[in-house]
Image 1: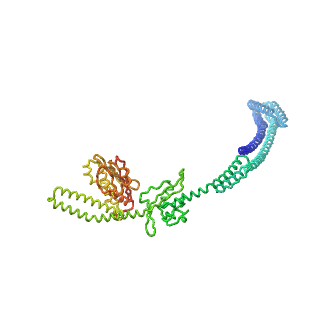
Image 2: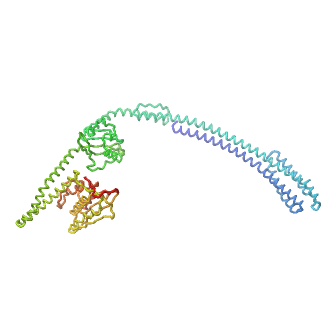
Image 3: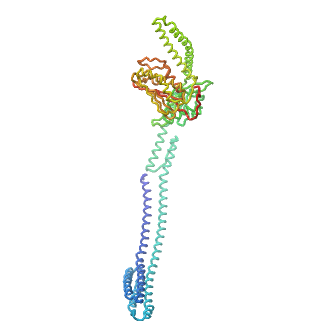
Length: 621
């Protein structure tokens, strides 16, 4: 018998027991219904007839009294009307004889009523003496009336007694039906429970054995043997599980060597990587680390194994980046400075550039994160040396350039009449070149101060709209000469920002000057400010030639100049200084440009908080 047949058999037995109980209940209900119907059908009509006959005979007695009270016509008419009613109900009672002795009772009642009618018809004439009529009523009519009424009452009592007996019989039937239903239901429930236990045991035992077997296989123990002797689907499944365990055991023995070799190969690859490499699982525990990373983190691969990432790295910010990568499934978007990790080793600061990469399956299930640490300490030191050299050279060049400027200016003022036109032109060119060199030296010194943190800034609440107007006022003559439209898009009641007014004015001046250089006649330059959340966006947009794609990523680097057909000059330091100044204010700056359609430079400034700020507060950045 297969599994389907066993289940159907179990349901069939249960269904048969339910049908048996329901059938037995229907039989008992029908018996109870018949008993109740007998009570109503056999006795109710006779009781109703007896009650109506009592009512009719009493009204006839009242009519007799009317006759005695000298109202013969009305009394006689009323007597005859109720006589008809009495005879009708007597006839119905005779048609509904169902009880032994009821026929004799009705026959005696009919005879008594006939005698009563005869006595009424023999009543003396009303014109005789009243005493004679009263005597006749009390001596003849009243006893006959009482005898008829008593006969009706006996008929009613006989049927009521019979109805009570039938009710007791129905109650007995009900009790018998209740007990029989209880016994039948209990027997059916017992049989059903016993059969269910037997069937569930026959079905559940193989399932329990197979469950234990699969748990054993899941734990890696493939020595599984199932003793299920049934030939149904469960037996077939048990046989397949046994076969599967044998095949898995053989497959495991075949692949253990390959897995070990692959693991050793992966460990060798990780160990051979020059940069530091740390592999973290989805619970942020280190599952692999190469010797380079272990040395950087001042630990050993064995000590770091299965240890929390934060306990080994001791960097909250780096852990937050790793956690965000694991949660989002995307590497973090960090700028160059944010991706640098500072570590102290042997009382020296070491710099490591890190990269975080998520590890996922084909179904985007997160497995872990890979952290790559690259030592950039030497590059940092070289960059610092370069900055120091530039600062020193700029400072040393400043004095001779000042002397040269004074000398050339003196020559142009005192010896101008003695010089030829060519000599004067050469001096003018030299003066312009020296001014450009002085501007370059000043830019280098400013940039050096910003990078070294020695620039002083006065951060106070300022009105961005006033700063923009102040920065644009020197360009009015230039835009008119070049036929360029300068548009201000500044909403009213802008919130104030915390900034150094001179530094932000310098940034705006530099951005507008760049836009003016690359905008043709008839073009537009738009300067806008817009609050968003807790910052204000300030943008300078033009419709010039735009910036080539290859320059956009490094346009804010030092000495980067876009190569165009126009030779606009410049040191290539303006945007780099702008970037450092905006960063010193806690903001960011970026460019959006489409070649041939213009550029938009945008920077943010934090809106001043509600706390009071003392005018003239200064800070070193």
